[in-house]
Image 1 (spheres, one colour):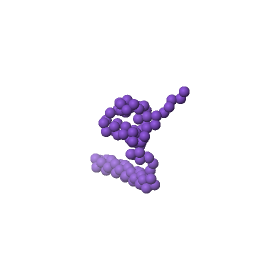
Image 2 (cartoon, rainbow, N blue to C red):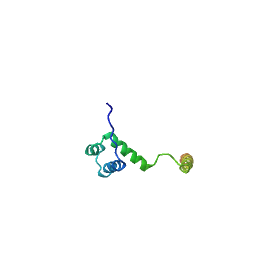
Image 3 (tube, rainbow, N blue to C red):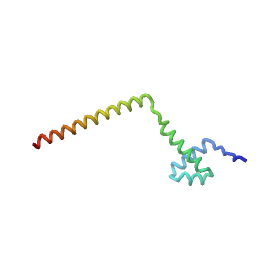
Image 4 (spheres, one colour):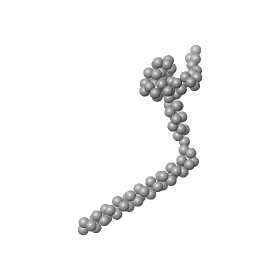
Length: 96
């Protein structure tokens, strides 16, 4: 006979996640205290954290800025390397 799953309302799930985050107790401890499966509570906590951090996808503006910044970093690294080489050459000439 298949196991019947319990349904938890949104308020209960949010409260359980809040307990984990605010008390600093482990997910396992809070799950035992509330009578919820540890994996289930872990999923709720992970989902809540992911929602707070966003979907992880870049907006078109973010993608354009990221490309611009990467190009700028590449140019600055190239300039740095050129300057390093010139200093080495300058020091060699100065010590002759």
